[in-house]
Figure (spheres, rainbow, N blue to C red):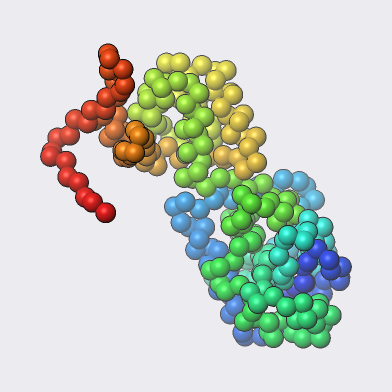
Length: 313
């Protein structure tokens, strides 16, 4: 990866931002940045990777476009704005670090990256010296998060629409300051999206849920409203008002569902006292029945084609 432009700043809630400037890139820093970017790209190819985030407002969209394809001055102006935004969102509880913003060319095309790297051995003296320009980035490189451990970052890559970026935030559920500062709306991962979709689908009642689960694999993956509309065509009880209620809740969540992957196997778990039964929803629908007993209590019957086996731990 050939790093064309690079700027970085110390980011902490109690440090003023110095205007961004360009820095040279030695071989060690280039390799370090290349590994971070490649790990992010590889993670994005996993089956349960978060969908690309949406850059919600025009100003943020223009900033990321400037980082990716603007002049050097536009690049620095955009980097400075993002840095100030991030510092403004940080507080005493957020970890200080270094915000690295770069533009690079690789075999896959041009990209821009925004990486918030935490210092693994935090020391105020080192941050102050770096902030004041007394030491170079290479002097603290080995103290930063290792490639693969990055918690917060953004990639702007060729091939995505102008309003979409790859955004990584491992601690999004606990703290949302990074994507908020970047102006990015993040979405649930595919597995979490399916769980949220099914949880709300239970509002329709057990019979509707059972029918929906049985036909979901035959429906094309897509946005929640589209999937719900197709369910409404084949599942009795999935009225339009219910579809709208479920879709609205999924869309308005802090981390919304952008796409429902109907091809993902659905796992069903039944808890009966201290006994847990777990399996694919389709298999359990075909093989398992729960009935109320006339004299009280419930009965679970599993109709297995072969002799069950058990294990002990």
